[in-house]
Length: 168
Image 1: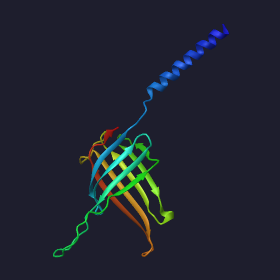
Image 2: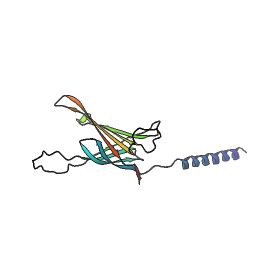
Image 3: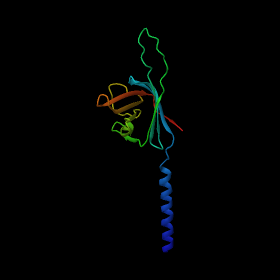
Image 4: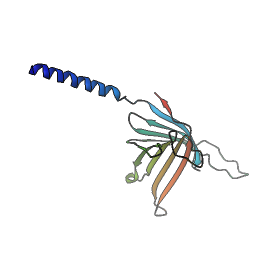
């Protein structure tokens, strides 16, 4: 009788474990969007990619073309794109159901910059707004120490993007 109870408990425990494991889907793939500058003079456009398995953000931005004064013949070479990969991203959902993915990397110890990226998914917004929100938004903050001026410089670039697409 004792063995029967133990066997029954073992089977029920195994079935409950299999049921719980089958209800939690594994998340793979990426969320991707193309973005265009909304408040940035440094960058014109780019792509952002959120890795749903590794919780990392890959950001690829194309710098704007340098200005050329009227009457001068300047070399118009397209600047090289900048790419950042930020790991350990955090996902937050606010009261309006807006999903925000944030990640940062701090390279100030090696005379680099603090890079902070916010990717905002507005598609599930349930709160009324006075203006239409873009499907996605991107904010890039760069902080570094300017040794010539002896001050900390903070640069903020904002982008509007298309709806985030799930890709394998």
